[in-house]
Image (tube, rainbow, N blue to C red; front, side):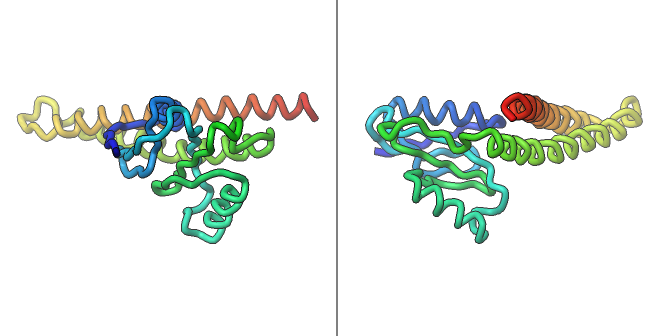
Length: 184
């Protein structure tokens, strides 16, 4: 039997934890599209899930080679959305970490940081631009400023979330760099 769930995540780590909780309940992910997850019944806890942001599109030569490499190492490609890939491995095969060494973790955290920072900055700039339209509109008798106020709140909130994710990954990068110095 299959199950469909509509759910929004802005945090890939929370999304990954949720997918593993669904697996523990006996639901195996089969497909993801924007905010829409499809599951099928499975043995509870059968799979461990990981989500990864690829450096290049999955259909690129590098993306396809990477997926082939993962498959050779017992990792199953489940689905993808844009540059995000959803991976799983049988829990019976032991722990599943995509990045096991400091260097690869550091490179991945930099990729995430470089993904979230520009998006967050664009949304923050959009919020400021909306603010520039709100202030002169208040008291003018026209109500377009209300739409701009909504745009300001939405863009500001989304920009804030993305910039907070960037800050989290930036802190993780700094921690990994410190750890690298200690171990080197």
